[in-house]
Image 1 (cartoon, rainbow, N blue to C red):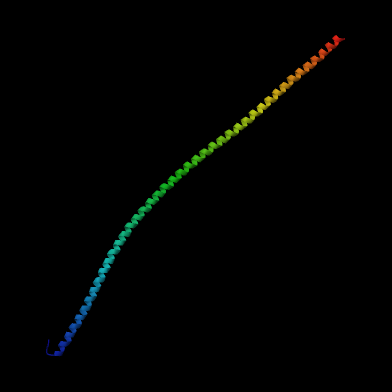
Image 2: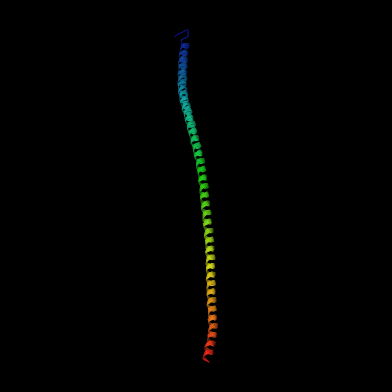
Length: 156
C-alpha cells in the first residue's frame, strides 16, 4: 500500500507485524495459561477425589475403632465375669478345705479322747483285777492262816 508517502506505509506494515507478533505471543501465553488452568482443574478434581476417599477411609477406620472398642468392652466384661466366677470357685474350695481340716482336727481330737478313755478303762480294769486278786490272795492267805492253826491244833 502506498499512500502519499511511501514511507508511512512501511512503518504500518512493521507495526502490523509487530502487533501480529505480540498477538501470537499473547496467544501462546493464553494457550499456556489455558493448559495450566486445565492442569490445575485436573489436579483440583484429583485432590477432591483423594479427600473424599480419605474421608471414606476415615469413616471406615472410625467404624473399626468403634468395633474394636465394643469388642474390648465385651472382652473386659467376659474377663471380669470369669474372674468373679474363678474367685467364687476358689473361695468355695477353700471353704470346703477348711471344713475338711476342721472335721479332721475334730476327728483327731475325738480319737485322742477315745484312746484316753480306752487307756483309762484298761487301767481301771487292771486296777480292779489287781484288787480282786489281791483280795483273793489276802483271803486265801487269811484262810490259810486259819487252816494252819486248825492243822496245828489237830496235830497236837
